[in-house]
Image (cartoon, rainbow, N blue to C red; front, side, top):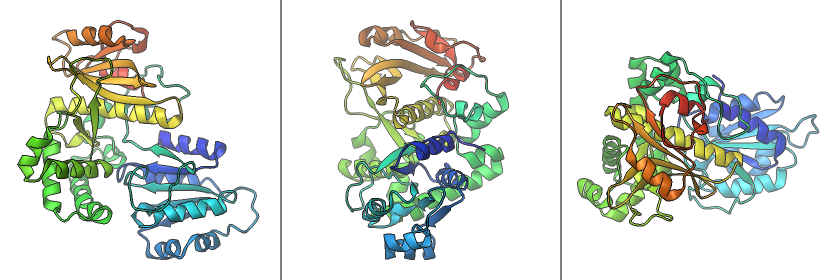
Length: 402
């Protein structure tokens, strides 16, 4: 199925000279997206670090790759070169810097990886100014509906097919299990992906010896998804120091097992400032129904703020609100460091709207405040036309994102 990221990459190739960095979880579509786009060019070349022949060329240096791609030949269109999983190479930054500086006018470059290419430190020189980062996420309500490239942040609402919606909730947004819609396949896929994470990715990208303890930490994070992290309590459970625990959590974030959001504290007295909330990239791993629904919303919002930022609409952020008096709202989306809209996720709309939406909207002067009801049917109205707190269907609000 076509992804919105294919159009994003095509747009970049038409407009910019910088390398494209496609970064996202394993099996989310990094390689597929790069190959689908590059295949549309009559001249395209694929180099995978996990392929021994390709690895030898990369180690030999930029000139070897240039010879393989015949970059000295005059062509009607610039060839597209894809470097896959090259972050596993110790000198990958130095290689890309040298290659780009030498051959930027003779080709276009796409770099893909299942570790966070923007922050992962493996040595080499800075690539500042030489690449644009695009962060790939699992499928979402809007992308299932319409994978076209938007021209603004918020889109008109659109109704998703009920079967597709239930599949998204049950099997997650990773393309293969979503398309298969088969429970047996999903369990096999889930087990294999876990093995790859701890037996391959963790080994390749870190020097950690305590793999069993890191895996135990991942299991605990899975059980406590949608909850705030208490580092000292978690450290006690797996018998490590709090600083070690924090390093391991950062590693799991770099490997796209989980992500965290921080509490918002600007212009908010008595706010919590130390405890991030933990979410999984794959919400289908969560057994607790309430935690899964909250993670589902978190994933949609996280995808939206990163996509909008990567597209150049501004600087977007995702936070939660909680103070020492236990007044809490699940999510705050910011635009250019200013509060934009609040979201409270509820499985049922029966209890009425949270009073803390009113409290924080007034306190922070937030333009929009939504309480999502997962039990509500789709309503064909623009949620962002409302300026007072309102209960909205999950299917409606999430369809207006990305």
